[in-house]
Image: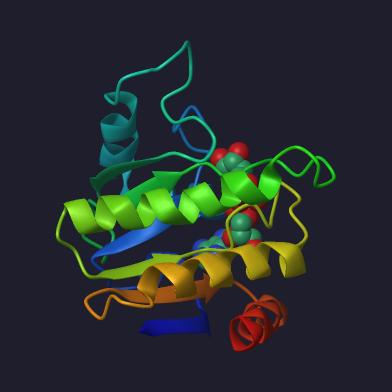
Length: 173
Ligand code: AR6
């Protein structure tokens, strides 16, 4: 199993795929989403816009994932997933967050790709408590990668404090 936690700007990573913590429109936003769109260039927005809507304004419902090229990024592909907004923990947040990780890995496997980096999905604007999100992320990933040596997963935190939270959860998972 290859699963590690680092502190980095995800837009700088040379991976088969990096994951974007997007919103259902897939038309960009702040945080890591804004950084990825800026670094990938306008072609990424164009590619996202051309993805089909499943309902008005929704290209990716919460918990699902979509893939596009990475354009100007060092990463070959971007897997866009939409994490849950934290509503206190009783609104299926953990289930939906788990689906983000599972569905992103499913797309990676379908495309026969091997290296992937995740940001701390939902831990910014969407307000998911970092320690709880880290437990979901690391337990799902450990479970998914247990019998899979082909995939290398990097959890890419944006601060040393966040890295410590995710590393602690990984050690306990
Ligand atoms: N590299 C790695 N991690 C980053 C980077 C970066 N360049 N920039 C920020 N982070 P957020 P969410 C971290 O808010 O909570 C957007 O507007 C950040 O410090 O980006 O899922 C979307 O369009 C935090 O730990 O995503 C949605 O509307 C983590 O990435 C909404 O935000 C996630 O924070 C999604 O909210």
